Length: 449
Ligand SMILES: Cc1ncc(COP(=O)(O)O)c(C=O)c1O
Image 1 (tube, rainbow, N blue to C red):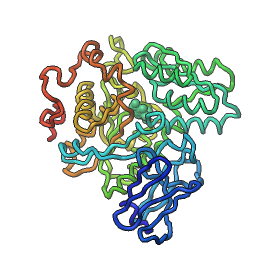
Image 2 (cartoon, protein in one colour; image 1 turned 180 degrees about the vertical axis):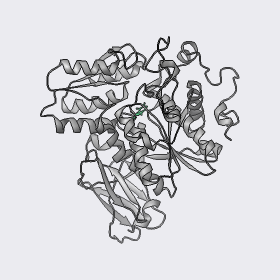
Image 3 (tube, protein in one colour; image 1 turned 30 degrees about the vertical axis):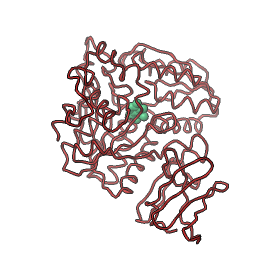
Image 4 (spheres, rainbow, N blue to C red; image 1 turned 45 degrees about the vertical axis):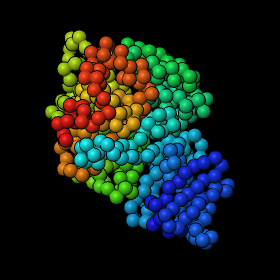
């Protein structure tokens, strides 16, 4: 089998057997003791030049050779001499599911915008977000650094806590999580199911000693020497996980699709994803535009646009002096973190996206693409649509689906919360029109088509 047939192959998993179909040469692949035997049409068995592993969702994944150099990634070349980087978080256990997430094209959105919009499905990591990458890297770094880890403590809006929870469970590390009180209840429930101890604190600015991150740090300090505060916002392992895996995967996947990446759009929670991916992509090709998407109340938009990290909602004596004031969970900052600082220079532009635009986009995505996305992903997609407006036709834009709408049923996907508590419009309510029609696009998209 020549490698040239690789892209024509499609793998399907069925109970106990793997069937492989190919237009010309290969008829099927059988797994014996973890090795893939390729049977060629006509009964001739040819040289196997590559070995693949079947991943979730029928994705094809190349097995790595276990020679990880500690940067969580592995490099090979394909038949076009393009570099392919795959993540190596684990060999064949639960942790090996982290990373190497699929990249898919949003056909309806691309057609409407006349630009190609791709999304990296970080929601398909085992705990449901890209935070798995950061959590794994931070745990590994802590294990390397400390003689012994007894208790893991983290301040989180939820996703990192959930990612840490499964890793801690298998290692028998007790996990203590401190969360602000403005996050969806289902995240708290999930954490409790995983066995984490959850402390909820009022949402407030980072300057307040009771901010969830400050509280978590203090709790870890008050425990024994072996308690470890993960400190995701300032932790090098967080952004390096994205610099060495997510960024390279995006670059390789777009090249494998025979496209050239023009723009990467992402919001910031800790800043690890945007910064790690942005820096990697910029180093690969300085023409790739890196764009930050910022929700209301976050100070980063002004930092990128005007050099000052400031937002009106966080001004002194403001009634709304929250960490940030948005429907979007897990994103928005009131400071420049070490994670963001790492790739700050690679960010070319920033868009401020309203909560209403995110709600509109999430509903449009569900009705048109059939995708049920969470609030930060919806913000990212609005950002991708705005970026598309500024780029020439057929440009290639990548953004990230951070998590599924299932994590947001009680807030972002709850009509009562959106309308009665946040004063926003629930798409379709006023007009009672069928919102699946592409003629009835959200306002921000209408302007760009
Ligand atoms: C829900 C959600 N939003 C946004 C992000 C981006 O976060 P960060 O900037 O910390 O990488 C993540 C990370 O996976 C996430 O889970």
